[in-house]
Length: 476
Ligand SMILES: Nc1nc2c(ncn2[C@@H]2O[C@H](COP(=O)(O)OP(=O)(O)OP(=O)(O)O)[C@@H](O)[C@H]2O)c(=O)[nH]1
Ligand SMILES: [Mg+2]
Image (tube, rainbow, N blue to C red):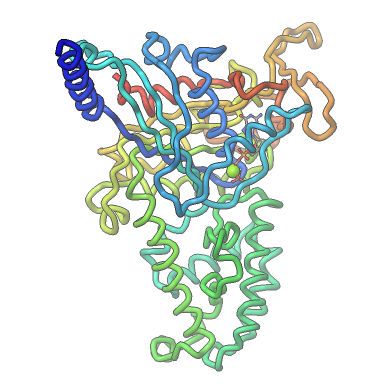
């Protein structure tokens, strides 16, 4: 009899405990984005690695729950959305931990991963009620290029064509773009459409966008899905181009053109793209994000030149529209967003010596806040930070012509040699003529530093600050 009541009591206790556990379980949907090669895969891999191996050799002093000894453990659990590809954490970590270590392969679309983090709540009332609480963290990786499409939702096909043509006619795009512009100019827009010709022109336009991104280092690539099509590769919805001759055609003829004409089909596909691709992404995914980190590689454009940097500025400007939730903003008129915290991170900070990190953040601030007076971000808490998801260099000082200069030592990716370099200075303001003339920055691709194991933490810079900002307030 005594045993039965003890069991009963235990069960009741368990039930009460479960109830408390349930009520304090927390959930965050964290979205990670940035233009291609900005460092998304490396960031997510390192973040998950730090969370899973917390307590081994982690340097997480700014992550309160860890610093205060309340962090218990984290593990990967099956993701909720089964129709979205899984983020390949093991594959990425295998590359970073291989001998010699290498960077993970580029990725091309959206992916997700879920982790459950157990911790001890700080709040004393809850602490007596339950031993642990769980924070479920859903991480989504998606290309920043997709955000560049948001302004299209507010444009007609004619408006989009005119804006895009204007950009194509400017330096540095014009020399490479001219031949395609000439081909489009030669077409009769009211003739019955030749779908193969349209497919060929769209292919040429896509190749041009790849050239802008990868050869010229430009950021404003539209439509974003053209270079990152995912499952839509070769689908007719991605086979349209800007029409270059709007100034030469009659507005009525354009309005009355049937869908079987060249111009009519372009317009129909543009509308379809906006609805089925752009709007769908915002409706299905974006509106569910609670927190967002936008990664930006500001160093490569600084090294590439003024055109590339100016384009990054324009790209960030366009990306910011997705977080402008003021009454009159395009975004708020179209969707009901719920992101409450937005972090902008300048990635690959291990490419510059530590005393330059302040400048890197100032530069990022200027890029991010340049439009703040025009837009409204009242409902979002924003922060900027300079990080390295995977630190590949060691900072030191070296004597040069009688002067001690800050230097970096690391393994150069191109030839695997360990080198010591003075990377130069990052401007704290948007760079002017003199910066470009002095060519003040020397960017070298470094390979990951040392072999690691799945049970050790990757070396990083300021990921703990990122974790505190994005997760800290949910782990009190
Ligand atoms: N030194 C250094 N290089 C980094 C770091 N993170 C990324 N990189 C470099 O940037 C490249 C791109 O990083 P990824 O993490 O693959 O970038 P991504 O945004 O996922 O790129 P896509 O998948 O192509 O969109 C890597 O191959 C590295 O060369 C970092 O923390 N430090
Ligand atoms: Mg990637």
